[in-house]
Length: 209
Image (cartoon, rainbow, N blue to C red; front, side, top):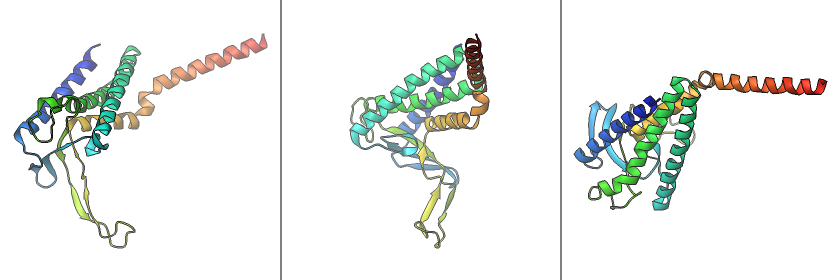
């Protein structure tokens, strides 16, 4: 079945279309209100992981990109296995979301340093591109109560990270698997229990004989 590949390709195209639009139409740190102060397009770039998290320096970037590539290869092998075994479509779609998100951010890291070598933070080198983030949803702004230990009186923003479509795909895919793991892996668990029971019966028969 090719439909999982089509889903991944569609999600990657959507992710890259958004990033290229933001990259070519916004200045770095430029923001535009979409729903008042609750949701904005805010163009930033970072070296690292989802939601703006980073690993230090160029070495950290190589490590992170290599890790992404490794996880993506493992993910594709697992996806292939799930499709071959007739796993539930929800699980396959969740895996497609995770893989598409990983690929989307890999493209930024690997290729954007060369494709956009004259814009913003790029240096014209492979594997040195910045991941483009643009979604910012500071839905709640306030301060912690003064009586609260450690953070008392400090200002906070929820939700403060700036993210992209690829990050959203990864998050939705992971949460879907975590929340629905009992249902998604039910058949595999039953197969495992059945195999254990058969082995137990076989051992009992051998002992009796």
